[in-house]
Length: 368
Image (cartoon, rainbow, N blue to C red; front, side):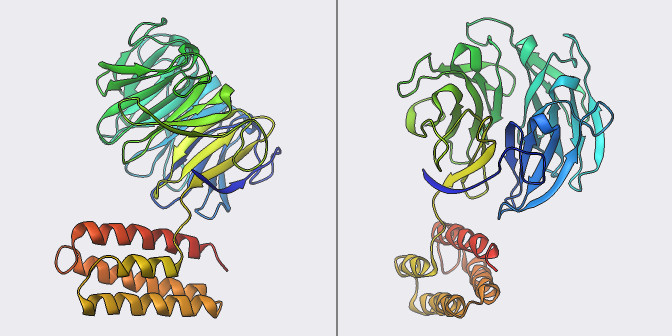
């Protein structure tokens, strides 16, 4: 996994952090970071530019006391696990406070330190209630639906779990921190499998604090005290890892949050002393690389010439330092691909090229 970008340092100014924890990224590439010890949520665009702040210290509506978890529903509403206030707060896409639920306790709908939140494709809201060692599930209004878990090391039991995620197949993944493992469940709470044990070998963990699921099935785990991120498939089989102790790009000091962007980028937050966000993934293809991709698809001659002409025009615009013009030419190429998909271009080929062009477009949007 290649290092792409980083931002942040210790402080309370816009773009600075004090022990950031969870991060979630919307389909447009906007990142929402729980800036825990500053008692706020900060938002950033795809180019990592600060765009706003939600909250501030307190217990009134829209305020926070150590926010630790963030998640987005299908309508773009933001859910925040407001840990020390023992509640979940909800904000609309504009940042306006909508409602909250929860209080201190162990009854249904009460919390003892809610630390993470995840939302599935049905917009069910899964909240990790750490000191109650359970998962609670709600609808988007905060109505209680179900719960599972208790303290222990057996299947479906937890020891101070800190991370939760859902995937497109309806699975729920829990970073069972004190048991140094990941457990997976169906949406109803039925245990499926577990993996991990204490240690530093591949597939082992030291206090894993966060988990994220990617659209293609990869499961990313912030292996916090090993200062690395490990990657698994949905069955728990080890795939890869990266990271080591340090403050250079690609190194970590206490990685606590992991999230996945719309193009498969992996966002990792770090606590003290790095207080930053790092992004990893595949670099977006250059326009010459897109030309190679078009040439390798075996398209009809006329279509290939049309697409290549748009790409050459985009490259010429870039050479003239005109990134906006290049963006327009690539956008026209995407429109042509959309019209041809399933007709003169196979859906698979169109989807692959579309993803590459979109990645390049996003990169161009950060220029100039």
